[in-house]
Amino acid sequence: MAIPDKFTGFQVNSSETWTEFHKNEFDPKPFGDYDVDIKIECCEIVGTALRVGPKVTLIKPGQRVGVGAQSYSCLDCRQCKNENETYCKKQLDTYGAKWPDTGIPARPQRLRPRQKVGIVGIGGLGHFGVLFAKALGAEVWAISRTRAKEEDAKKMGATGLIATNEEGWSEPHSMTFDLIVNTANSFDGFQLSEYLSLLDVHGKWVSVGLPGGDGITIKNQDFLPNGCFIGSSHLGSRREMLEMLQLAADQKIKTWLEEVPISADNLKSSLLRLEHHDIKYRFCLTNYEDAFGK
Image (cartoon, rainbow, N blue to C red; front, side, top):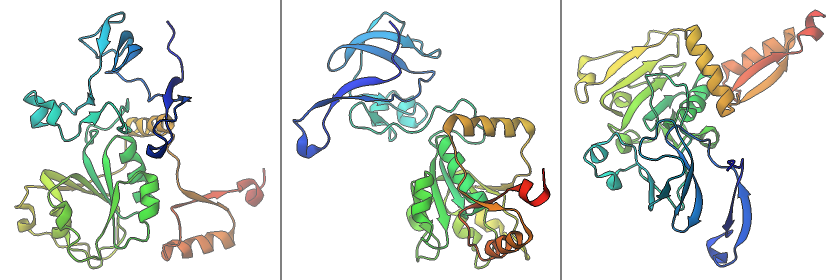
């Protein structure tokens, strides 16, 4: 039996119309290495396995299978490794759960799905951080001085935004981040110890922004509470760039940009706007033939 591109089911539109069912088609999530497509025989849910992912070891096509009320657990936490996966904090219910955007075929070894990642500075570079971290399956938080970009950050895929100008901003997320990527272009009023306090034990702080000035002061005491690590990153290799482009194509990642026809006046005005952070979130210079001829 061929697997349809779209699945069909009965649904209701809201809890207020919970008895008013209608048939509807929907797009299934991309079929992954650990997935099983089932021709449902009866609910809830028993049927025949039609397609089995290459990393599935316990089910073969043609077998009669059933699905319980839980369809996912992380398999990495203490509870899962002790065969208590029903208590996994990241478990997903079979019914009514939103499936996360995971299952990426190419991802850097430094970032794994379901890790909690913070992006400091939501500008040209930072907005890419949010987009790509989300595409890689991470729980992403934007970290900015104010909440001015909160709605944009959420549209990019961030779970939320942490505003560092608010009193006690670091306390609710203390020691919960696996990775924080700093893309900020200014260290004015920057207290590194507060940012590092967000990291879990042996978490990593990676700076990729290049602000001017004298930089920040680092004290050994700042690393002691969680044994965190601090570092930086240079240019990506060709392999990493190819992986990045493939990921962008697979996940349909779109840059938030403004097209600017290249000209002397437009270059000037664009640089002035960059200076005043008046951009969401990249300029793209276009119309080269108009400026330079064919």
